[in-house]
Image 1 (cartoon, rainbow, N blue to C red):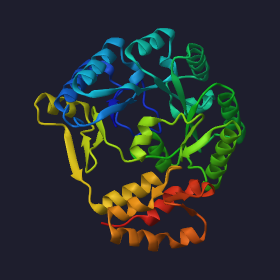
Image 2 (image 1 turned 30 degrees about the horizontal axis):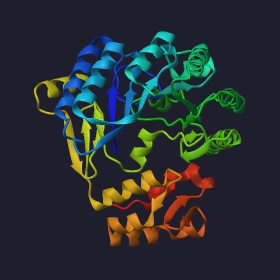
Image 3 (image 1 turned 30 degrees about the vertical axis):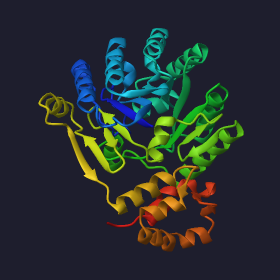
Image 4 (image 1 turned 120 degrees about the vertical axis):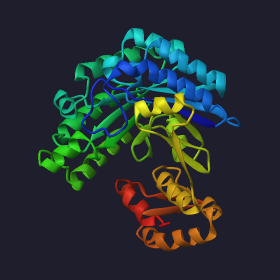
Length: 375
């Protein structure tokens, strides 16, 4: 089984924390969609031996696409790839884009899952982030989705930023856990390069939250969601009733996927591919049949490092037998570097599986980086 990711690089406005590739100039949506369709045709052999189990529309803001544009993309996928009978088809949506008409459109084209970018239920936080919606849009969009009952619903929430108090975070969690939502993604704010927040940080107009405060908020999120029946299955992801995000889980489990659109990434099991992160350059490359993609073949060390990073982020952890198969010498390196983590009970071995003890998930990135091997 494999997945297809479609990157829609357009937004109404730029969130101050976002470093994904996007444009606020929506005049080129039609030509980018046409180019995405052309790229789907050009790369139809990439997953020729695979059945497509998941399709994910990310961005950017794919909820701004019209019904006609979505139908065109779906037709191109169906024509060029073999899709399983009941795929998970996710669309990222901003709350201000969710209307009854849009829901009908998404049902008609086959969307099964909505990932709703709420981020906060407080207007001052949304203004701080420069989100395009207000808290009333969050409440209205959730009500529409819950009344419709067609889609699986995932909600995004951000914590760990200047101005977010314990009381505000508790309010966000109390409201969302009171709703019939089966999946939540909760991210600690990170200040990324080439963002407004990064510029403000260097000017001294913004403070990064202290690690201890971020850790406390992370624990507050974990405790609140656990108390309401959510399973913490990946550092930033929680679900009820095993409603895991299948598409994103495929990344963490090393499955193949095809990325379409400017800046999109692909993986065939041996090589990584990435498209140029520029709309004009992407359009020109596809139109001229030059290809918009660069690639690299993963070394054994690359495969080991990626497996460490993706596996230890999840409840499924690392398979010792798979580590051995990557390379015996690399496995010996893992054994040597991980000894003190096992001694300190930060890493746990259960049968064949190595996981990070849940108490140490807040420092998972540090543990992973300590276990990395240099090329």
